[in-house]
Every structure is written in C-alpha cells, then in structure tokens.
Length: 410
Ligand SMILES: *Cc1c(COP(=O)(O)O)cnc(C)c1O
Image (tube, rainbow, N blue to C red):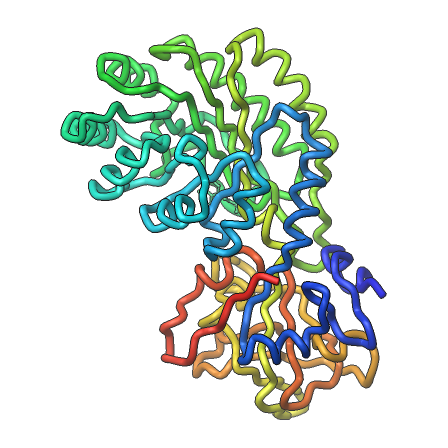
C-alpha cells in the first residue's frame, strides 16, 4: 500500500503488514541486518528511477552532474557514477571519493571558495576542472601548474548579477563569497588567456532547494544571457556551461514536488540559441538533493516514552547529532517537521500526538514536534523520510559523544 496520504514524497515507498519496506525488505529485517540503530538507508532502486525520470523529462543533450556534497557515502557515489554524466566536488576529500568511485577526471569539476593549495595541487594533478572563484586562486593555479608541468583545466565560476528567487538558499547575486562578480569576469578571462591553461567554460550557480519552476526558469534564462555576454571575453569557445541546479524536494507540510515540465521546455529553447551563440558547448546541470534526498531514510529506535503535563515525548537513540537538518537546525528559520512515521506501525494501531526527541541534553534535539504518529513503545523504529541528502555528513556527530549511526545502501 503506498503511503502517499501522509506526504507526497512517500509515494515512493510501500508498506506491507503495516511495516515500511526499504530496498525490497521490511524495515525491521533491515534493522536486524544492519545490526544497530540508528542508521541511514539509501535505496538504489529509488536512485535509479530518479535519474531515469529526470533524463526522460529533460532534453537529451543536457548533462546531469551529481554534487557530492549532498551525500558523499562512497558506495552511493559509486552507484551514482554509473547513472550521471559527471560529478561536482567541493574538497580534496570529495575528489578522492569521486576518483575512487571510478569517475573519469574529465567529468569532475571542483567548486568552492578558499580552495587550499594542497587541494589545488591534487586537482591539477588529477586533471579535473577547477572552477576559479577569485583572482588569487587563478594565480595559485598558474603557479602550481608550472610547478607540476601540467596545464590546468579551468572554468570560471561567475557570481551573477541576479538572484534565484524563492530559494531555500541563495548562492549568487549581490555580494557573495562564491565565484567572481560578473563585472570582474572579463578581466579574469583576459589574465587567464595569457597563461597556459585549458579553458573549460563557465559555472553559474544561483541557489538551492527551490520548488518553484518559474523561478528556476527565470534564473536559467538569465544565466544563458550572462554566459553569451561573457563568452565574448573568453580566450576560446566554451566547452562547457554549467548552469547550476537548485531543484528542491518537498520536506514540509504543504510543499509539493517541483514541476519539471516548464524547465524542460525552457531548456529546449535555450539549447537551440546556445548552439547558435556558443557552438558545441556541453550544457550541464548539477544537482545534489534532488537526485538523492528522497531515496534515503533515517531510522532511530525508541528508548523511552514519557508524559509531561499532558504531552507525550517519544525519546529515541537518534537525533540532532545524526540528523541536524531534521532537527531544524541546518538553516531553517522556522522549525518545521520532516515527514516522520513509526516504521514498524505506519498506518494502523492507536494513534496519538507526540514529540519525537533524541537523547541529547538540549531542547534543540527534536526529530518531530507534535506529530500524529502510531503510539510508540521502546523498541519501535521512528523513520524520518527525505533523509538521503544533508543527513549523515551534515551533522555534528561528535556532539555529546554518542555512538555514530551507520549508513547502508540497499
Ligand atoms: C551545494 C551545491 C550544490 C548542491 O545543491 P543541492 O541543493 O543539493 O542540489 C550544487 N552545486 C554547488 C556549487 C553547491 O554549492
């Protein structure tokens, strides 16, 4: 039975005998197989269908990159390597994971402010594309290239002169630490052209977690315009134009999945114009959470149930230290609940309103506040959906020195 009633994104999962199925097995069995709680589980089949659906919707010529930041678990990255056209990394640590996963260096690009010299050396030695984020970074890349005797592959990350509206996180427009201001890019390109580098193209990243297709369409249209304008200053034709991503997933009550149809339509038009204005440039979108977020769950075990002045608290062995985002402390302004169920009693049984917490001595340690959920007893499994991105790696796992959660790809 699908459980779409609870949350649109849960339509991906099935329930048999009132137990959530993940990776084709009941959650309770998976918990026994994992051997401990809490754990994260990522479902291969859901990763496959997400990428396949996206490809079926977007024009064929669009290259899809995976941004490792969303979930760098090595087994998951290796699985994604077989599905996507490239990967975007943001540290030397992520570079190692991508290379270990078998991603060809020519399909890896490196963005992020403050790249350190050892990271730049590793990137140049590996032969990946470096998205330049400052003039100083260009100088460092040139020096290291000379030192290693390897011509670096570089693209320019542009801080655009516009914003992605209605975004969970804005990463371009106005004063930003990311990229080089659009108005300074001609000067950077001039300097770049005087050095022995392979010029790859542009990277324009405007923001994250956006559910509004019109906002994405508008930002994409402006990104193409900006690229056409700045391409006139480039030392050679653009081989690649990375127009960012920003596709969000629904987390909170009332949110709906993003409608990709208008985005696909817009891209079809832009591709035609880009062919005339830029030539054979590969157009890339880079996505993190959209590709992996809905494929993952976090499961924690109920340790205690308490009543306090008429309020039920379900205390688990997981929480903020494992899943900062679900606790509401990873960039949320107003705390809202991620979709949560009792995994071994999803729909049936007595129901109640409860607040699900972790074991940490801080009121911030919430997994769900005043949710309707089956009556929970010690040993039951609380499941947090939409946990495939910005979970394990984005959480302060050392805080209060509790055991680490495990991660499994099923
Ligand atoms: C964070 C980030 C991404 C991934 O963002 P999602 O919201 O997970 O899609 C992609 N590209 C860059 C440059 C980023 O900083």
